[in-house]
Amino acid sequence: MKILIRLLGLCTAVLFVMCKGEVSKSPLPDYDEHVFVVNIVDDAKKLKEYLTYHKQVWPEVEAGFKKAGYQRIALYRFDKLIVMTIRVPSGADLAKMGKIAESYSPKCAEWNLLMNTYQHGVRGTSEKQTWVETDLFYEFKNK
Image (cartoon, rainbow, N blue to C red; front, side, top):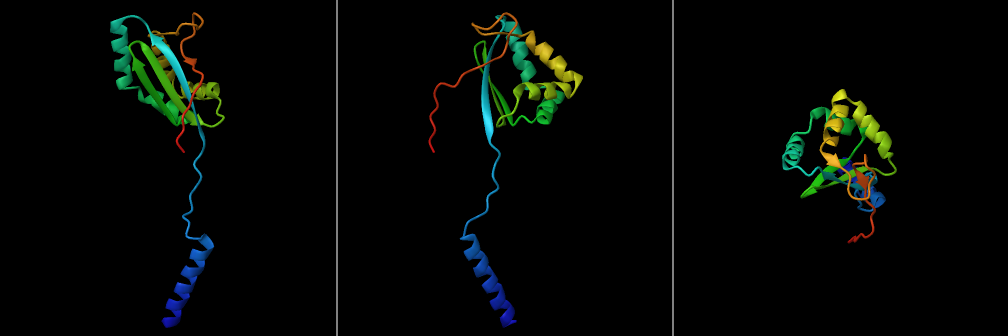
C-alpha cells in the first residue's frame, strides 16, 4: 500500500512539473465584427410594427442564422436609425452566410422581404440599397 501511495505521489509530481502548473486552455476561434446601418421609413406605425416583429423573431430565421454560422447578431436603435452588429468567424464570407441563412426555410426569405418594406438606406446609399456596412475609423482596446 505504501508503495502505491508513493507511486501516486511521484506521478502527481511528474505531471505537475511537466505541466508547469499551467491549466491547459483550448484556443477560442477568432471572430470578426461587422457593423451595418439602415433607416426605418418615416412612419410611426411602421416603426412600431418593425420593433414588434423583432420582439419575437420567427424561429426559422434564427435557425437559419445558426445554420449559417453567425456567432452573434444585435440590433440597436436611435429614433429611426437601426445599427446592426454581426459577429462571424474570421474571414467568413458574409454574402455566402446570408444565402445559407435565407435558404434554411422559405420563411427566412419571407422575413427578409417583409423587413425590407420597413427599411430604406441612409443618406449616401443607392435608391434600392438598405443595409450598408460602416467603416471602423477608431478603436480603443484595454489589453
